[in-house]
Length: 533
Image (cartoon, rainbow, N blue to C red; front, side, top):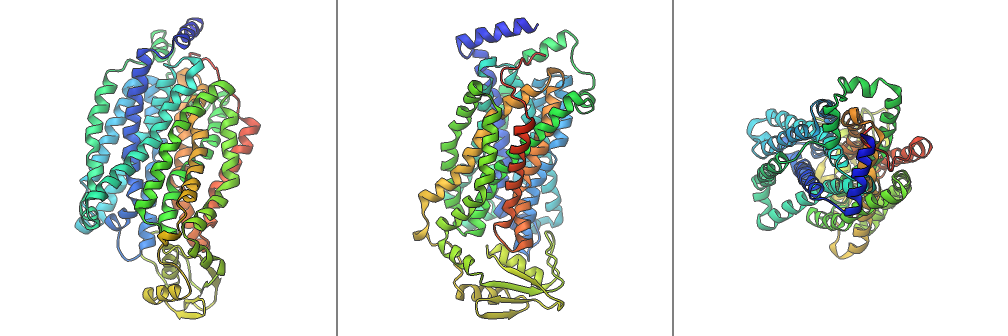
């Protein structure tokens, strides 16, 4: 069986991409693009969802809650990985990831027709979280199924290149979501968009769903799985075989580490940069979306390039170099973003003009703030203002801004004092260095391409065919999904707690650095492994 597969792959490699391979890549990529679009449209609109689906009165808490709800879709992904991974190893790759796309599409359209908090109260919040969980459940099964299916159709010498086409769909999905939002905001007023226009991007995904299901329905089963099924060699207990046998479990743990490094870069480059430049640096969201969109267009071919390169020199070192570069540059990149997007804010931050003194100060991430101190710290973070916190025995909150000292929480008085001390209420368009801002937004996305391009081939090659879908899905979603999906929430929460707008960035720095060290020491090179065994 193995010798026959090798000869088939050699003939395919020599003759170029076959019609069947093109159909497999097109169908898998379009479906994955649709699922990523559905998932990312929430990210593109997260700044609106705080007001639409969460209680009013604390903008920082509402924004954090919207980020946490976005992250919830990532947190449930390992459950989807186990559920659909097991099904994929038991009944086949094709039918399993046909189900995942149906589930994702239904959940996304559901968000588009969901009543807001103002209309049905807390039920809107609950339903939004449930729909996000359904999206995450579907995506937990989609990624493993798509990469396994394409890799098992690919010739060995082009496996990195062919599977990297799937990796571009994450970027193209985000790009599509940004484009749709930008187009709508061009033709609608801000009031119209906030009232009902935000629903359209979710509802139009129904068209993409119909096309994706039609295309995927015409696919054949993976040849590797078909041969296993014909010879009765499929696993009867893929979960137990994947996670209780050390010879397989050790690769599960190593994939988790590499995926966590990917998640740190992914969450930073795709999501947190967008929130940081808009929420902290006060650059208009339309400008941020435009720059991110251009960066994604520029970076997309790089996924294919690094996938191709991994077929030539191997997967491991390309991914490890990206983790090292990310660990070394994330902090400087974000300080550079401040310098080139809002130099007046950078100058204000360097003065250290704001100090909060209080007792009984425990910032709450959800719900209404309890004390004046909580309100002050949340409000300052929402404005993108760094501050020094001095604990005191007196519960009364005091804020010093430049030469002014204010007692208690007074939103208007604090803002007036900040402006008087030199804080810029918004970025000055004339002082935004667009080329440098674009370059700094592009760099972490290029790091992501270095990891994500070879990643699909790497993780498929780590595991035997009989438990491949299950074994790769869970650690990938625990690492990339949990770390990347919750990164914006964790970083923002750390910033609120510390008063330093850069403090939370140590979170992705440490994770990327750990992935580099552990990966260099223990991760094997997988290029060229036979997928039939």
